[in-house]
Amino acid sequence: MIRKAVCLAFGVFLMIFESSLSSFLPLEVAKPDLGVPFIIYGTFFLSPAEGLLAAVLFGFTQEILSNSPAGALVFTNVALLLSCIFLKNRLYIESRYTFSLVCGAAVLSESFIFLALSLLSKGETKNIYNVLVFSIPDAIMTAFISLFMFRFFEQLKIRYMSRV
Amino acid sequence: MKSTFVIIAAVLLLVLSFLLFTNIAVFQRGYGNAKYHLADGVGPVLQVLKTPTRSVSYVLDNYVNLIDVKRRNEELKKKVETLELETQKIPELEKENERLKGLLKLVEQQPNDLIAARIVGEDVMNWFKCVIIDKGRYAGIKEKMPVITPSGIVGQAVEVHDWHTKVMVVNDTNSAVDVYVSGKNARGIAEGTGQTALKLKYVTKNDEVEVGDKLITSGKDAIFPKGLAVGIVISVNKNRAGLFSDVDVMPFNNFKKLDEVLVVKR
Image (tube, rainbow over all chains, first blue to last red; front, side, top):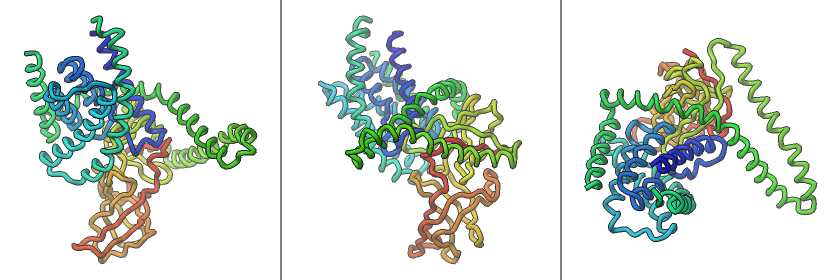
């Protein structure tokens, strides 16, 4: 339990580090969504409860580090988690490449969930272009980073989590 | 069974976050309080991370420059590498010196009205534009205070915590600034697009707005004081349906290159 908490804390630290780093480096074109690999790994390889915890924690952290409207990113992360729960028995993640592909697709679906939320609740369309422009590079970047994160999760699982 | 509970909890959270998103006051207040207390922990971490990330940035900048030099000067590679390393720091320091001089000049003009701050973080999502500065409530910053540089406006403080403040940049899609076209009798609203350029809205086709015109704040939005530089008009399109022209504005500030800013006390 403590090790899982440490893993989540590491994820939060990564997000804060990304925020700090992107103010110095030109990361504007593609910013990875570091919460997505945690949610997907938690749901598919651990349990939906862990996925839910990751979705809420990372959604909340993203809202703290972003100018997003209240509730928007928690909503997209939890909606993503629900999709993962329903796909758990239908989608087989066999390697880090499949995991990376699923993470990329998840970032794309997050964008569409956010747009649907904005349209349904506020009727807003002014952010559509902005969200669509960045969704593909963001998805590619997240997919690339999740290759390494999968390795990290697997190492952690072999070394520690399987013993819990 | 456990999975069913998780699904129920997730659906409840989904409904709750939807209600939050729709700005229902009761939910907003509770969520705002929780967020305020939890976000206080982020400021010190960002402060600590500031130094190593600046070093990483410096090293990467140097590395990129060295590759460029290497490509152009194969024969003098070794010599140029050494010289570059020695001299690269000087222009950077000169630039910083110039920037700080500008800030100091502004602070000296109005010593009690400005708070100098450094950028320590940026929005983690591409969909929104905000920066995080290293001064907060303890430094006297309050919500809706304008944030500027000697070049022009940056944005406004939207979330103030004890040690840090979130600043909504003017190119965020939720940002709007009331502006005048300098030297002309035209007024409009400069709205963020999420991209680098801003859109100047509600400028009628009869208004004399031309490419190269400078925009200044009008002071009528009750956030930005009158007369601050906003940006320069880069395109005007009057050949479109409707009453208003389509005007693009380039802000004077490059928001990706900001290091220090000033918060205007009100």
